[in-house]
Image (cartoon, rainbow over all chains, first blue to last red; front, side, top):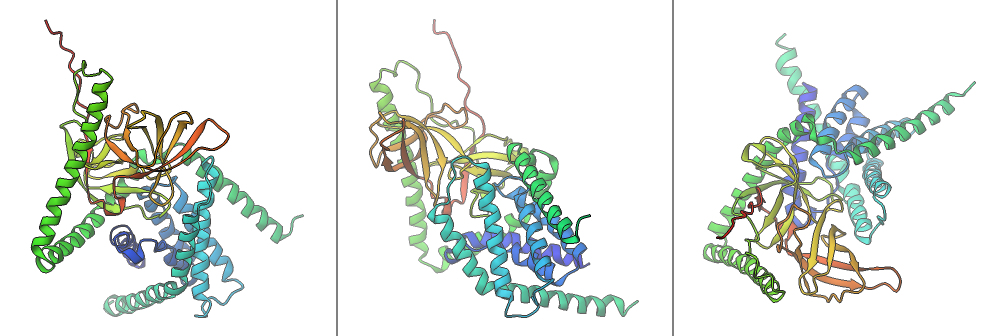
Length: 171
Length: 278
């Protein structure tokens, strides 16, 4: 059932990101909404749970995006590995660090995207527009990322609570 | 023999190498021709369509009923008329130039076939670095990979992936897109490729051509995808480097990709009928 919740949240995020946000002027250069979710999975959820969701939605994003196949999978897997590694020596549960972790995650995802484009396209160069996009996305992540993580955590707790009340007690 | 740390570092390096190799393979060979890719699009597209329709519905209510009913309708009508006039103007210019080069001996064919299919945009690319859209028409509607996607103002892109009810369109502003085009006044040929910030580059234009800012760029029809004479954009900057054989031409597309809602898919070019006139 937890997987269902994760899938529902991810679906909502993908739909929001591809249909609603591009039409809102302030949010047209917002960061990938699945990256805070990947960070949430790597900090607060077990590895097997996170990996399954990352593989499903990395594959899905690769198919609806125009980038080379595997780019989103790569970004999410490395983001997951990176955050899992970071929490071995950082107290990420500390709310002061969370904005920086999300911002670093978004920066890492952008670096993977830009790096891949630069690697496979001859004559590609990093334009001013790309730098602006990355800067805006990191700023957005710094200020809004923790709210997303709080929301994911809160919805998961509520779900667990509701699920236990509804089904575990009945049994 | 090796410490645990060393093994981990080697493991990470091997993982990165494998990752780069796999990305390189998939970058050369587009994988989503296979069924799983289509399933993924089919899975997400209905949600996107429902969301887009709801947003459009709410926005239409706002625009048509609460916010200057008459002005909104008149504006829509005028925009459509302007689009039609714009297309007619480009076609007429093309016709005039063709006539001046004594090509009127040939039967002039319609620039765009009668068989077009209208489709609604239901989703945009999740990444700001790639420019694709999803539309609500697919294989069951007769759409095939490689078909041209246009709007009355000009070329929008081409179909790159098709599922049964939905298709993915690679827009001309994506850096992977290429359209054979020519400058209308000078007949200089080049390849339109996506650039930064919604602009396109007209690449491989020889230095000998005199191209001015404001010149119209149209499709040449030589790529076998886009019909000839469709508007692509207007030249916004020209740089002639001191060395090299090509000049750098930037083109601003006619299509406003931020506001793209409906598109036309050119189903198949009208077949030429070679009839012997006796």
